[in-house]
Length: 597
Image (tube, rainbow, N blue to C red; front, side, top):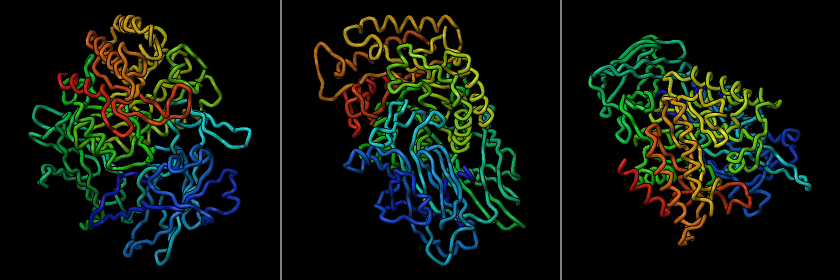
């Protein structure tokens, strides 16, 4: 992250131009691109959609599973009138890493595939002619970077990804791309924090901007200004505020004005919601009122599109979630495209925002091994210092990007790592410290724990402000013929947690079964829809016995693509909806339950 990552905002002082479309694209399996000066332009390139995940667009498995270097290129003109301002290029993400060249010159590089990359190209562009952006990218996995995995070289010499996580390693320029024109002196960033005192909202704000006079205005939806303050740091007070509530959202416009000698030189507007987040004993409270979380773990995943951003998918997913009476989702297992958060702000959904710290167990089937006691000494390896550096950086970037969204009420700092060793505690103690220092709103921090992380073995859970559990009793553990034991084993664990008297909320961030829409059987068997419903009912019975359980996020919202394996039939089939977003029978079960909670 090299520049301000404020989402593009068009007004009299700022302008953006979409660079989405068909770009030139080229694989570089032998890593010869730089030696042959591909950064100056690609020869024999093919066309590739941006945004887009390249894997599912081909008919050859070598291209679908491609791992290594690959390149994108686009030519563009700078719009007339931009020559007096600074010009940036902004990528919603580059998965998993990229180096940006403008007219052959290296501008910046970025590690991490799910957060914005912004580059100042002002000194490299030709305002009177055509310009060329070239990006060298790479999607290899390692134990130094997030998400975690490894890269295998086949006997043929071809590389393939070997993820330590259970979703497909989609790659490419998967989110929106803009050219952005900003004033030479501009607004860089802002943050807010909210306090509620009786019938008054106090908004503390900080603005990062170039030299000049700063004024802040808060406007209602009809444009009425309800509060004004001057200075780069200050307070706004709103009497009888419209609060942002769950499933009842109200958004104000936060307007920042930068002036020089009483002349406005830049202006930025963003929507914010007035709400507070607190953990009070074993309750999660929004605006001092307890909220029970109902919803899903999700993925950015859709047929053909892979992880590429598409507004229609976002809209459909929210409509499906609203239909089930859900109020929350976790961005498993990485920060989503920013537009997901914008619509969650509008719809009043809560989000557990998760950094891509997944795969912190050396296993290609971690979803099975994590529940069966496998231990790989992951946090005692030589890769840990560099991994922690990348992990910390991506937390800072995630919070920098998402800190002003009222929908984001918590940061999830990991998913299913090994947590039973002292090195794991030492690692995550530092990680939690990074997150808590970075967030101006001091939201609760948590992480999703797998079954090995029990109250008598886990070293890391004391760091969490609320406890998130991923559990698969009745599926990976005591599934099938042994299902009668699953509830006994499940309640035995919950009784151990109960004895700890932690006085913290518990949220189940994963529970579910694979199932096929075609499979029906009485009595039920694994993979049938009847089995999924029976499994969910058992979990609901357990949840209702423990008052400290304050949320249920089913795994998964929809079927999604994974790496191939004998436990996966064209992907993970734990969806409550199909990959095409049509309801399975379990969707009706959830709808009825959540309507009454």
